[in-house]
Structure formats: structure tokens, C-alpha cells
Length: 280
Length: 319
Image (cartoon, rainbow over all chains, first blue to last red; front, side, top):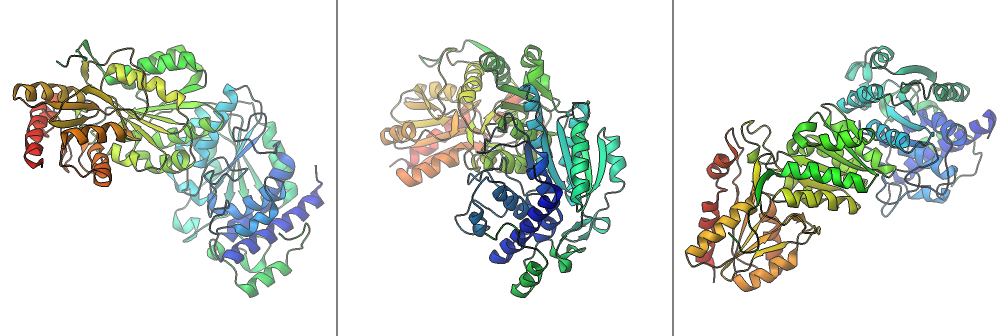
């Protein structure tokens, strides 16, 4: 298992991949991807027990579901960097005949992806279904899921929250990317989420919080969350992140939710991110 | 009645689903049931009682149910979701489209109380658009069986088919006329009665009415061929093309909107392969209303006499 310094090096490379991918096709979502890079790196390079080659049914391993599918660049980079498919394939992102669709899909057979996501609010339900199946199979491994915070405005999320608590789905660790931003602006202005911690708690979940851009905190909190599994309640981690983290001009604004950098901005961004594993 | 198909009793197609689910569950431990607060209406109680660990009550939350089913299928289960047809399709179309159809999940979407024959609850619950919605989804199999026996057989058969399926059935007691031992082959129509003057292709509850129409036409000296199409997608093109090559005209009959239903699938086939005069027995761009099932079918032009009239009409256009 890599130490923290190694994880930071991986995260730096993943951030380079993200900005290069969206620059290359002049399309995609760098903001949320950069914000969640430390989380994905910790999950795939330390926390999760996952196997290669990829098995769709995930038997005997931990599984991950991405509900906010628009941050596909970070997931694709981490999947490639952890060996699910060739790193060179990142160059095909959002292009014709690629397995790396704009939003993740099983349709083109990309290893690592178990359900399509993009239309928001659906991934939590799917993750809960997988967790139920693991229980039926007496498989002690865990199911992880990530949702956005703006995504919590979708009603299906709250249906799923109710179901998971009622049915004691305690082999599930959900993380919310709590960056406070969505396409039209700050979530507090677009549709305020209120006291998220109180809301999840009142629905019957164990609620943790972490700084999603401090990899030490991510590792510690995810480990703590694993310790809560099997105790009769689902676990959610409210993860504070900064959209665009790691690239100074992309940070702290919803402006970089879904636009690509130009050549000059790419150079600026890459100047801030050390190449540690070799660019694709 | 038709020589080979005698009415042997009366039960709802949803009862056939319940019986089929129980039997399929006995043979296949991967089958799980999910229901959105309509367990009794869907006749899923027997499965629930027999396999409580494999049954999930999801409450009145159909969108979540479809997602749960996709997740269960990902790990190798064969989920059967149960709610009314209205809440199985339009209400959760995007969940089905993204998490099930596009993701090619092996989910069986089992939809009761379809069409006008839901009856007294009225148009809010009487979906007449579901076949169209579901058949448009790439890779979705769409099945609309005609009686208790066929629904039971279909429920069992779909477990062996890997891929998403929409299984549509209904609420009211309805004549049973299919043999209880007939194998169910997805995508294969059933020749109910051979004839020479006109082809009638019926699906679901209207197969029973079409059988009555065939008898009435016989009294008028018209020899009608009757095909029972339980699988709307993939459509059994061969049985339809073979029939119209002989009869040269066709009437489709279904408890669904004219737009987007079985009739449209047949018209598309005929336009491509063998242009043939066709009349539709279907709801004509209208919502339903409260009433008794048979009253509603008559009022909305789906009765046996309407099939007879459609045949008379199409015969005038036959070259």
C-alpha cells in the first residue's frame, strides 16, 4: 500500500491527466474532478479491496459506484492508473469510438464501470441494490458510492436514504462531494441544502465529515467509516472539497464546473502539477 | 369457440404473474422480488412468504426501486420489480433508461393494472402509452401476455432471458384459454386460428375479444386468421408476413394508444417488407376514465364488435 507521499504523487498525476483530457477534447468537467482527486486516489490506491481483471459482479471485492457521472475524468484517470485499462486510452476521452464516454457507461465495456451515470440522483439506489446483493451472497466486502451535493436536490436520493436506513444497509459507505457549487452557482443560492448533517442523521445514517482535499484526513475518515460497517446503519461522509483544487485559477468557483482550459491555461495548470508517473 | 383454444376458467393475468414468480423463484435462487407498496395487488405475497430474504418492500418510491434492481442485477441477481404499469414506466422512465436499459441490466419490470381494464380508478392510473415507451428503449424486450396461463409461463420464461424485460399484465378476471402446459418462447407469435380472408393480430386482453370476433366473422362467411402476439418486441415478423402474404389485409388489436403500440410495430414491418392495408383497434389519442373494464373497452372502441367492424373496413381496401 503506498504511503501518503506516494498517494500525493499519484494525485498530482491524476490532476495532470484531468486537465489534459478536458483540454484535448475541449469538453468535460474539470472542477469537480480536481476537487475529488484526493478521494479517488485514496479509495483506489489504499482503501478499497478491488480486483483486476475487472469483474462486473464484484464478488469477493469492494465495489464503487459514481453517481455524479460528470466527473468522469478523475475516475477514468484513477481506473487507468490503477491498472484497469491502458493509460494511453485516456487520450480518447469524449472522442468518437471511445470507451471513455462523456459520462461513464457500461455500454462500451470500459473496465471498472458497473452502471451508467450522468442523469443525476440514480447512483445511490444502484449502490444500495449492490449492497443488498452482497448481503444475500454473504459477501463481507463493502460498497462505496460518491454523489455530488447539488445532486442531493434530486428526490430519488431521499427515497434511497430512507430505504438504506430502514433496511439497515450497513455495508455501504456513501460520500457526498460537498463543494457547495453547481452549474448555476452556489448551492446555497440555487437550492439551499440546509443542515446536511442533521438531515442525513434524521434519516438514520451515521454521518462523518472530512476535508476531501487533505489526503491524510480522507484516509483516516474512510478507515473510520469502514469501522462503522456492520453496525446496523449506513454511513455517509460529508466531504468538504474545493472545486478545481490544485489549479489556482480554477479553485473556489462554479465557473470551471463544465468548461475546458485553452492552451495557455493548460500550460499554467500543468506548471502547478508535478508530472510524477509520466503523462499518457 | 376456436377449435384448439377453449375457455377453461377465469382469472386475472396478475394472478398468473404471482404464480409464475413463485414457481420461477423455486427453480432459481438468484431471483429477487421488489415491490413498491402494492404486494397484494401484484400478487407477490406468495413469493414474499416463501422467500422473505429475497423480497424487498421499497415503499412508495418507484425510482429508487428501479435503481435498487439495477444494483442487484449488477451483482448477479435477477430482480423482478412490481408496481402498476403507470408507475413502472412513465414515472421512472429515466431510471429505466440509464440505470437499466443503457446499462444492460438483467431486470424484469413487471407491470400490472395496465390499460383501461384497471377500471374504476380512472385515467390517472390507466396507462395506455407504456408499450410505446418501453419498446423505444434499445435492447428492451416487451411482453404483453393474454391470459393467466400465458402470463404465468411468460413470468417463468423471462428469468432465462438475459437482459431487461418489460412484462405487462392486468387487473380484471379474464378468460383463460391458453393451455397450461404451453411453452413460452419470447418473440414467437402463436397461431390461434388459420384463415384466408383477413389477418387479425391481437395482444393482451384483446386476444379474448379477437377470438369472439373470429366467431362472429365466421357467421358472416369471413375466414379470419388470428395470431396471438405476446411479444411486441422483438416482433415475430415471420408469422405476420406469412399470414398477410395469404390474406392481403390485417387488423391489429390492443389495449393501448394507437400511437406507439403493437399496431405501429406491425405497420412499420409491413411498410418495409410488404405494404398491406391495415386497420387499428386501439385507443385513439385519448385518456381513459372510470368505469368497469368491459364497459370501458366497449366505449373506447376495443370491443369484439369493433374488431369485426375493423375487419369489414379493411376488407373494402383489400386489392
